[in-house]
Image (cartoon, rainbow, N blue to C red; front, side, top):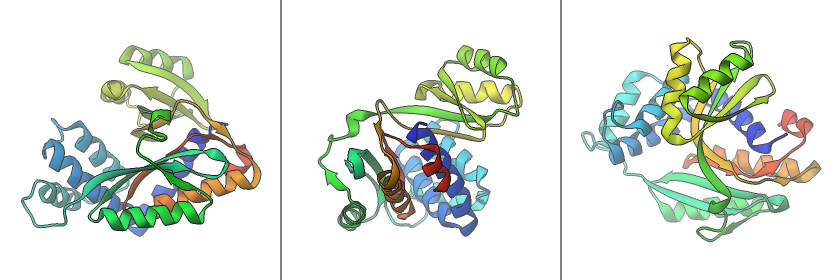
Length: 247
């Protein structure tokens, strides 16, 4: 089973748990601020902002929090200024890992991310060392209970999707970022609510890992995702279903 798909599912479940604790709201606030700062505060003309707002709302983030984050990003209210940084490296079994970070202190973040890699049998590499392995794609998950496969496939391909696969209890749709909103709209027009929808990084190739190595990779990724500065951690691996299920 594709490690990307399994990790994507694990992340979504973990985000739901973190949202109940309020932890995800901190990450959403930072991303909303950055999206508003770089692309403006109007979600109708800023696709990145619209996407993160939709994501935040799906985890029941209050609208007041969203609006305050937009204002802070636009400089209308005081607040800490964040910048986007990426880190690249390798985990156990030679798995490539790409980490996206929003931070107010690059030196602190670099030190802490390096420490996480080191403690979990990984190591940081230089800029560009693994970025070439990944490509940005829209990934939309739809419950298999909501629609028939043939009907969904025809609909999304017409809207510009690239592919669709069966992953456990969902259909996983992949789409170029520029067609992401078109496919979401096609689903909305048929009253089909996605289980999850993101523009994310997808590996072009994967490394097979099993047993303890697979568990170590998942633990490394989970620890990275737990860090307040980390907005996303991506890896190119295949793992057995039983390892993912136990995560």
